Length: 108
Image 1 (cartoon, rainbow, N blue to C red):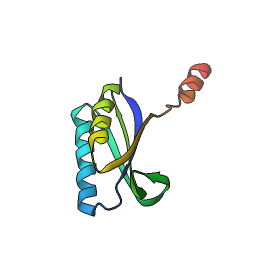
Image 2: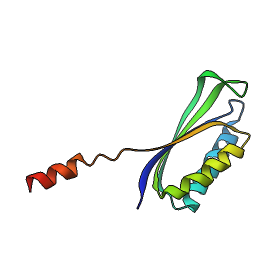
Image 3: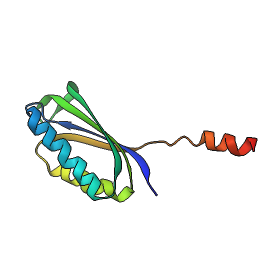
């Protein structure tokens, strides 16, 4: 069963555009290898961090929205944890609104 996930990660601000693209492709391919699909990538650009992380005041925010099995997340987060370019990451499971399905069942 596929579940909808959102992974947000912050890259070091001193990375060039090409390095940012390489990082995005690396994690996108890693997700695909582990069964994730329908990957939507949003590069939110460089932003000021709320507080200093690893001696950085700014970061490049990248957001992935995708569907996939739960076991696709651990290898990607492990790669991010070991990476020098990622300063923070977070994956959350999206709430799938099943209210419409329930309403259809009630009216039938």
